[in-house]
Every structure is written in C-alpha cells, then in structure tokens.
Image 1 (cartoon, each protein chain N blue to C red):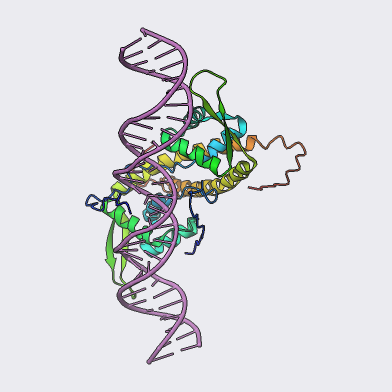
Image 2 (cartoon, rainbow over the protein chains, first blue to last red):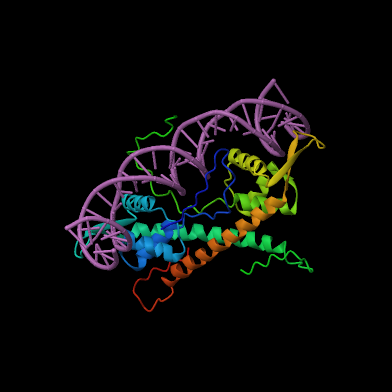
Length: 139
Length: 139
DNA sequence: AATAAATAGGTGTAAATTACAGATAAAGGT
DNA sequence: ACCTTTATCTGTAATTTACACCTATTTATT
C-alpha cells in the first residue's frame, strides 16, 4: 500500500500536483464487493487495490467502514474462528444496497459527463492533418 | 493555531447524504473550454453548468481560476471594451494544455474504473433465472 | 531465540478542499 | 428609488484526505 507521493508544496497550494482523478469510489466499490461476498476490512482493502483503487489510506479506510456501520449501511461481527487477530467481518444491509443504488445513479451521471468531456477533448485532435505532435496516446 | 474544527462531533458526520459523485471535473472542463474559446469567469461558470456541472461554488470557482493563473496554466487580461463591470478574460497557456492532457489521462483511468464498477454492478441484476428476488428496479 | 514481515484493525491530526455566506460594482428594468 | 442581472472576489466554517504512527497475532527468516 505504498503510494508515496512526496510532493511538498511549500506554500501557495498549487492547482494540483498532477491531474488526479477523483478517488471517492471507495464507498460504492466497497458496498458492491460486500454484495458479492461478506469480507473483513483487510481483505476488502486488497480487493479495492485489485480493482484499481491503489492508494487507499488504511486509516481512513477503516474509518469509512466504521462510519458505514454507524449509518447502518453495513453490519459487522467479530470472527474469531480462524487463527490470527480477530477479524471484523462485514455484510451489507438493505439500506446499504439502496445506498449503493443511489451511488450507481450518481456515478452514471458522472460517467455521462466524462463521456462528454472526452468527446470534446477528442474533437480537438481528430483533424490530425499530418500534425507532427508526436504525442501518440493510444488509449 | 486556529481551532476551527469543532471537535465535538457527537453526531458523527454521516457517510454521505446521498451518493454524490466526485465533482472535481471543474479544472479539466475549464481548461477544455478555454481551449475552444477565450472567456471570462462568469461565462465559463455558465458553460460548466450547461456541461452538467451544476452546483459549482462561485467563490471557489474564481479562486480556482486565479490559482490556475498563478500556476501559469491560464493567463488573463481585463476586458473593458464592453459596458458593465470589467471582465477578466482568460486564455489557456501551453503549460495549461499539457496539464489538460495529464488530466485526460487520469480521467481515462477513472473512466475505466467506472466501467469496471458498472460491469460488476449490472452483473448482479442480469441473471434473473427465475430467482424469486423479483426486485425489478429500473431507476 | 530474536527479528522481520505479513495480517488485521485502528488513532491523531495537519493539510487541503468544499460549502456557505457575504461584499463590491456597474448597468438596466419598473 | 429599488430590484435584478452580470461580474469578480474575500472570509471562514465544515468536511475530507493525507500522513504518520500504534497495537496485536501469526508465520517466516536469520
């Protein structure tokens, strides 16, 4: 769980170190994962990374989980069956599934905006009349 | 040190009022708009709304613009030609265009994650093999 | 046996961002 | 005279994220 971006901005709070995409997909992905399998935090965190959400902060991650529980979107119970430190195993609730649906709607809107963005963005490059920009982004 | 954080959060800052999509598309969209036409703030703000980014905070919006200028991603000059209060007309710089490209890459990654999210999300609804779930919610 | 590393779950708080509430100024409508 | 629209901008509360650090148990390495 590295993600060491030592970008020390002395003063002035620059616009942004790099075009950093919004990262609050954690909650919806978490809920979606819990809809498939019950799991404990550490496990979920690894799945988030596999999903593409590298750079999830461990501390905040567990806080999110506890907050979701407080809001009754998930429930947890301690699992002491296996060896090692006891694990808090989470399950999604009905309310949690509804919340996930809200998220899905919202993210759908966002997806449409992204599409509009890329349509505009690409429109600026299509002429391509022997422009030797040499920036061959192959997405 | 300003104690601007009322530490007494008995109430506990609920997970999120509603599935709110990340909203920091403002910067890339702004730069993209400026790549097409030079414009002043108020105008840009309206275009952002048309784009789908309703609920842009006016105060923060102008601050972002000034910060982008400080970072030399845009430049501005006062336009006093027309009547009314003078307008600060913005143009994108070379550095700004490069920054936009970085954003585009980053947002492309995000788009892929969103796609993965929706693939997973939909996978939970398609099977419908006479499962008496009968939850046919078509938002 | 001691040490390290992986697993598992956290706390504290500085820094950054966003939300909310105005101020200011010129022009046009009623 | 007052209200609304256009236009730019400041102050700061509230919230979120980033970074640093802590505890505990088991397994692997020296």
